[in-house]
Image (cartoon, rainbow, N blue to C red):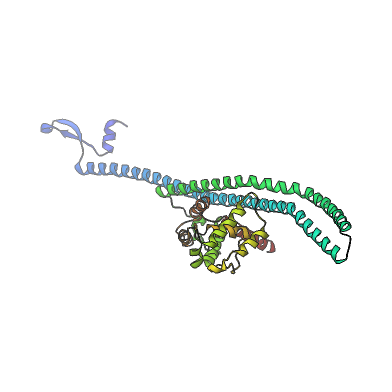
Length: 377
């Protein structure tokens, strides 16, 4: 196609132009030029709209993908914290078993001495009662005691290896327990920072873990940390019902009951802790009923954890825990954020280990009940 043909196609007409209309040239009508320019503008507008739409569509798809990835990462962080807390709980149990083994070993060391004194006293009383020769009676007692000593030594040799193993495991678990706790705090802090970055970038998580934390009966996958937090706050409520008001006010340094509890707590934390029976006996001697806390409500915690709980009463941040529970149950804060704060409080030594332990136990119990239900179906 020649140049004139092209010009004719786009609306130019060949005619005489210039001064006196003596020159041959091409001209276009104003209406035609306006239509041509309008068509060009419309084409560029359509192209621009398509480019913007494609960019926005890509951005929207990318944002949706990022949200889905963050939902999975958030759930994985919760699950990891749950598993790590189960490991922490196992180390905590190992430490308790180590203390019980140490108490048993101490009991074995003193049991023979106690028996020896009681037996010799009984033999002397029988010798007088039956008018036996005291020398012969003593020789008889010595032979019996020698046989008992051999049996005692045999029993100790058989059990000492196992006890030493439990004690060694407990000592190792003390370090591992602290390491796992620090790792848990590190993980949940990292997840919290990631959530804050999501909010800043306009990515709002819409995951099952963000639903009302305290709700039950949801068909969606439950929050991995829900069971732990349920158990923790249920134990906290149990503590509140037992120690609010007068008991809490009476548990202050300088008060008789508080100082007695602290003395017992120091024994529990020592390298040679007393047995649970001895701790229970010592605790019964403390006048807790006198301050309105007779432990008559049936506490769910083991005796060792109750002693720790009593010792920490002046330090426990009750109002903060009440607020945290409210925010969690109202859905204002998700489980990861709440669990992070509880972990930091525990690491600071102002909430009892038994409360977290009870939380893990509650979570494990729920899992066991669900498994039994599935097996029965």
